[in-house]
Length: 468
Ligand code: GLN
Image 1: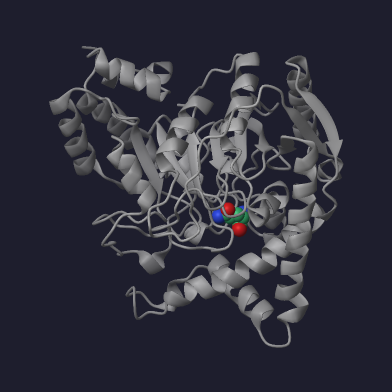
Image 2: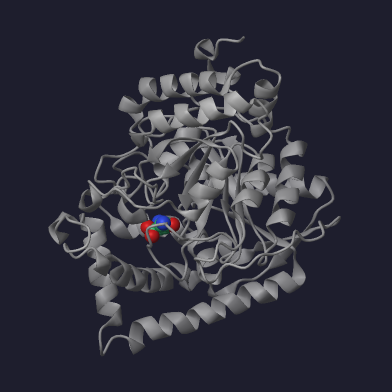
């Protein structure tokens, strides 16, 4: 047997297929996989602050069960998985990276966690994030910032900071995050990963600590598009607990695609390197006979302003349950970002301001939905940046909440509209940090986005890599 503990960098299996082929060929046991991953977690976690809780006992228990049967025949058999700490995990501490839930032990698991583990995955632990998923850098965690494994002076993105960093550091093969305004796609881009924000109403939110209920989605991180498709097929579908979730059949995959580029996305504030990257991606798509069409999304300039009205409004309502009675710790343990959002949200909902802010924002949201509907009459998907800049330095934006909010300029509209978007890794910046893009599709077009992403990665001969 191969001794996985001595595997370094590229020898860590980076795909589900590689993992399962190794297990089935008895190259290594699931227990040995756990040894190898835990060794890496213990080695790198003190420096990078990625895991808040390591579930060593649960990991070995699951691995032993898998090895005993020896078939590894489920979609995620032997796949190491870890979860953003806003996913409830039965009998395992779940903090939302907030001190207010410092000692909260849930009585049940989120549907996504259950589905992944029923499909054979090995749970490694709970991941750091911005507290209550408020943020775009991971720096709002009450347990300290996560560092980007590609360069520890930089942020890994957020709010699902640990979910992205865990994969980039080779500490887990797949992970769960959430995406309310970009929190899966942006960290996926910052850490050289594939990230999915699914159609609203396809993956159950049951057991995910709510941020903004009309825009929250469960996000997924993998190294490859193929793995994302496997995860998506495991996660999607009704569970009887989330009323907006409907089952849907895999659509017919298109042969020919038309891709749209919105002129509104190329305005001031977009970093030169990101703009050049999009230009390169456009040329690659053209070279594989994918037609590029200019489109217009005139209301996207309002996306950040309306997102920062609707989202805090819903945050203020959702965080109302942490009143010191139900979950133990007192309200004074809320961090400053949660407080800022509760105040903003209460203000825009208050009598006298409701019509001027909340109601108006909802009206503009309808306009935004109409923009995207019109665009999808012309094109099958939209090519867009995810973040206006490459990863930024830790501390660079922390004193300027407005600047941090502008991180969401290319992502928040997608959540407000509800459509799916696939973030794809493609290259590294001059500073040596990952940059990538997203493909946005109409509702329920995930499988077509996977097809497009796969064709792109095949064309550039993309190979997944880890940083450590
Ligand atoms: N950056 C956005 C925010 O701070 C997105 C957060 C998210 O998607 N959870 O609200």
